[in-house]
Length: 377
Image (cartoon, rainbow, N blue to C red; front, top):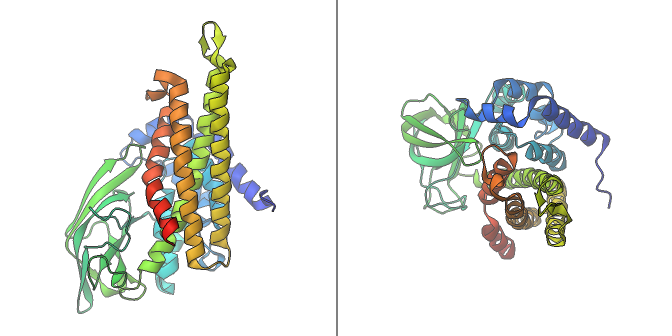
């Protein structure tokens, strides 16, 4: 089987690499994180100019093609540079749900501005106690004529404080964990009754806790049919899981490269530590973990692009996330240990990469969750 990139994928990869080399040095990233928004507006506009925001979308929606493999090519490079711009919450999660559930008018209104870099989205789906169960929804949506009343609270809403519109997952009917009865609504970030508490995650990315107290939206703000949003939400989350797994692979390979380089210059007893056989073995194990993770993420992306049924696609996603989680633990911890105390400092990019892959490890389900999910499918 040929795993080499197509000409278009190579161009996409080179585009990201050139951007990183020119615009994303470690010191520049630190300034971006310290800013109020936690990302660069200039970089986001450049993302749009370079066409990166079109990659997750099919040609019918005006996108690059919507291939999961194309997406992993870009996310891999994002991971190596540890980009903090809200690509996943806006383009993959928010845009993915609009593409999957939206009517023609909703797609025209939202996807065009999104791909032009003029619209930020956030998906509010996680709740306290829901863990990784997407059907565990207590936020309510009550239809009152041509309006819908929203009540509840969402946690860890990625890009929630910067988004122009929120995609709220709420329950219109059924019990707390029923698969039926879940809908998604578009909510303006300045709506009455909306309370946003922003914070910065350990990896430097912005998130928020958002409360909905009798927030009123028109019935036309619903995406798709009433109570039928869960299958689309699951598919979009699976796609996002593969995307962040590819990002983790890129970050892990950056950690490996930086660890090998450090071992060639750091001396102990007058000798570079890279000449010690015990450390060579450990770095060889890191390399193997990176290659295993890369292979299984490519497999999962190819599955998503195939005509396989939904169960097989979900199994491939969980297999990839589980394997990547194990690689994160092995490669991340080894990188910190071989660097020693300097690996934990804010002044070295290794510590920031470690924080990012640690966050990815629990994002959209940790290793244990996806191992159990794989065995249950």
